[in-house]
Image 1 (cartoon, rainbow, N blue to C red):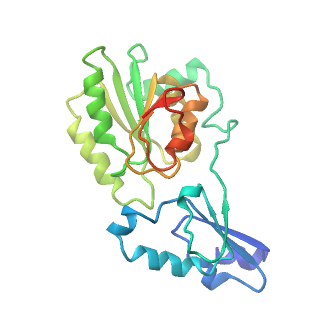
Image 2 (spheres, rainbow, N blue to C red):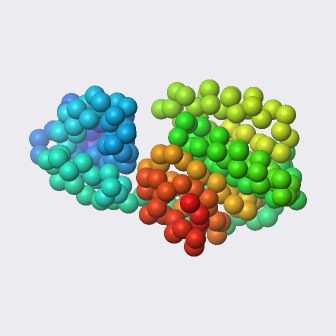
Length: 250
C-alpha cells in the first residue's frame, strides 16, 4: 500500500474492508480523496457482543472523506462523512460464472469422489461459525430419508479467518462415517478455486446457505445466475437477493 501510494500518487484511494482501515491516517496526502468500502454490520447484536467496536471503527473511519456501504441497512447514520450505497455484484463472464461443459463439471466431481448419478446438494462458503453448516447437515439428513442424495460443503481457508481450520476439521471428524457427505477444502489458487466452485454450483440441484449473519452472499447470486434455487435465511442482505417463493426459500 505504501509503495503504491508513493509511486502512483493517486487522486482517489478506495480501501476495502475493515482490515486496512487505518491506512488513511498514515498515508493520506494533500488533497487526495480517500473512500472506504464497508460491507458488514456494526450495529445491533454485533455491538452488544463487541461494545468497543463502535468507538474503534468510528475513530479510524473519521480519516476518510466518504464511506461506501453495500446496502442501506448497514449505513451508520451518525458518521459525519459523505455516504454512498454501492451494491455488490457478480461478473457473469468470469471463470466462476461462465458456462461449463458437462465434461468440465464431471472432471471436478470425479476429483472429489462425487457420484454425478446421485442427486447433489451444495453449500459453498467460508468455514466460519455464521454459515449455518450445522443446519445444512441436519437438513440433509432429513432430506435423505426421502431420497438418497449427496451433500457437499465446500470452501477454502481465508487468511483473515483464524477459526476456519478448526471448523473444517470439526466437520470432517463429525462426518467421517458418512460416505455421502463431502467436506471439501478447495484450492487456494484463485483460478482453480473459481472453476471448481462454478462446477459444484452447476452440478447441484439446490444451494443451501442458512447463514445466521451475512453481508451479501455472493454464492447466492452466483447460484441464481446458474438457475439454481436457494434455501437460505432472511438475514443481512439476503432478502435483497432472494425473492421468497420465486428464486429461493427462507
